[in-house]
Length: 122
Length: 382
Image (cartoon, rainbow over all chains, first blue to last red):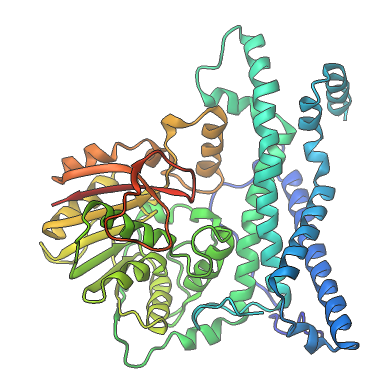
């Protein structure tokens, strides 16, 4: 068992807030898809952070253990660096959601109409 | 890793838990800064013109345009991502809290406390709180899972750090408390309360900040959640600030008439209801001493100042962040309500947010500087 998972409970309760679900009007499928993509994105971000810690520990110590990783003291410089890495991931994964607005801002009506036409066909 | 842990009740986050929480903070910022402006553009450049072209006249209200926005895939995606990010945040913090809940429950047992904790087993949580899990926080303000449980307090304390994204005083989350005192010092520079009550205190973020300015005073704090208050009591004791916590409804407390010199609340009124709000002001009037001060802090947004997108954004808070009284609070005439309850010298205006209150400051009464830079203050004298 790795240090990353050693403290986790075997069975984790799924807590669900009491309230009205699903902003999508065509049922929960799209919401679930978004939720899975977003969860996956955060998991990738966590992995990327862990890898960054590995690299930094390795560089500083020339050989390390899982305990070294867990106890690594993340300073403000590395926190800032990681935040930038995450921004890049979010830009990449959710780029498609900004396409339509980017086209609107480009003020090219033909380009925009072409895009919307192809978008609506899908 | 856990240098930013200002008191022993704050749940410990391991390497990956910190990464997860920070990744969600960044994702929420990304949604606000990069995806939300796309929705405003969609509204202004496509949905509004299309509506006007189709109907031959502008929309009568923002709801008509919101209904058109709801047909847009981009807007649907933004709605979903916002609410999913919120759920992920509570899940990330909840996983961290649940991993160490037994330890936290043990740490909450305080020997020889300076303050006190009074729970009420028969307490009836008001419907405006219990109807939905406010802020989508599973378990809400009042969830309690056993006679020693502190889960919701730990969840709220750690979650607030992530939710506020460091804009409310970092790990202590106490800028609102300092701002309430700053407002009092701005209006009454020599105020020296001897008995203070903080209503809707949750884990005591603002309560302790307020109490810290008046060490000669006895400070009381009330909220609706047993687990929340148990955590608040332990947190206050660990930070060495004596507070008397009790489980009570702010509409009708068990305090005697003419008891307090100062009554405060911190972003609580918008979690109540149109019926509860005047009752809370009436109760403040009853339990304040003559000459005592009521000073409530609220969100600085006012519906009248909002454009169409701002109003549609507000509807998100009501529909999907489970803030049912959002619109009511943003349109409430606090001034008339306070006067109707009998308060004199009533003012309603913006106070600059501050991490340190200074007597005689002039930081009240100007225009709002925006969310987290200003707070709306409603104050008056009995």
